[in-house]
Image (cartoon, rainbow, N blue to C red; front, side, top):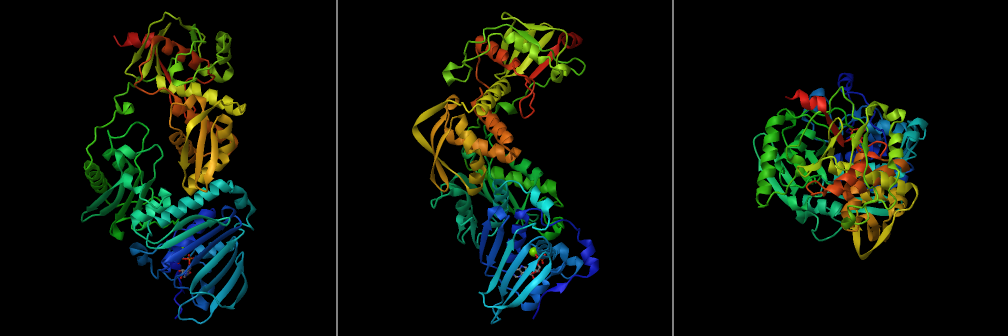
Length: 594
Ligand code: ADP
Ligand code: MG
């Protein structure tokens, strides 16, 4: 029996139209979801040039009849819903009958497919919606679909594709979202003839280990505790990282009824459950699977969206937070200090009074942080007053005033709350965030070193091993030349690991692995696709890692030096990622308070 039928128009109209295929990753998602819908237990993904040249998915699912093989490529041809009502109780992945039609319109598609009950299979070849070949063929049960030269007839789309590294990362991200909810299905992912992931069928935990652990032993998953809660409204299962194993780079995954979703509100619930347990900047990793009656969530008509609306979000927030708390409660931990969480002083910048460019006189050659390695310049400008002139370029005019402010080396200066430097200036009180100030200073230095490929390298006595997931690997490759320029000495050990043999001399007191992980995470989160952006992200990530932390007591000399360094920067008021560094409370404002 043929099982595909055309959707009535009324239904078709209820389905929001939208572009299904935006990039190789969306194409891959549609193909793999079709294989899953067809009941496959083994799915192979073969990719060439990050999907530009080839995206192939081979499954051992139900296969299609000769007639269905042809119909599958018609718009709104689906075997999955018949009536509009079905949309609301949908349990399969695809349902709009649009994916294959969209794909074959923008690529060259060749498919072989055979059902178990058929002797011969069908081969069909379609180029940009034109069927160029359909004939019987011999092939295994299941479906083998090859999508070549994606967007060959849409040059604009093709041009909009990012670098191979980025597109590969997108492919893997999409792939992770799927494989993490189908642990019982075996997957492989091959890119340019290299097997990037080989995932045997197993439990959820084994799947997580296979994707992120890079090892047979449960090294990765042993850092997690299980969450398991059943209520009438929702059931929540999964794994959350033990607080002591949290890292800056977090893997955070929510799934609902077998689908990946983004949910910033529920993310808050998880973060709240961890509050007081994590060091500043650290994020909890988690894999949380929700099961809920399909009626209680808003069916996501648009397949490319990953945000899902729940009918009862507040109740679920509470249940989620309580479940994570309970899971974590099995560990007794002394909460670590989180300086950012302490009541921060939030004095608004006076709106009418712009911050004046301060005038400072200190000895800039003094290196206050010598104990932490050569963080401070060996070549601090002697005539920095002339640099101050440079502050009054038109770009900075809005923040400087004609009124000159002086920070003399006898001006009262003190550290407040382990976090701020307060210094009296001529017309008020200047408040400076110590960590951010140092981030800005280091950022400028690292950028300069990157531009001049002159980072000083310190050989490590004991090389550290950096093990990476395939998507991290894809992020790392384009960064390698710059990492080398700044002073990292990396040698590839295996397809997924590097030996770190040397680090920038500013970072000798730190473990190198988290520093690189942090860089990779920043590149991923903030998005960087050009060398300039890579350099900025590397410089910023290194600066964040190398900068003095909150809570570090500073001597008077250290404070004066840091302030002097800071205001030499062309943009000393904000960090490269836009955080406020300095704030001035003017005399007027102080007087007004009384
Ligand atoms: P949808 O998945 O939304 O129904 P698609 O365009 O993705 O729409 O697929 C159209 C139809 O082709 C599906 O309903 C299904 O019947 C059939 N099909 C697609 N891929 C496969 C596959 N790998 N195995 C078996 N049938 C498939
Ligand atoms: Mg589909």
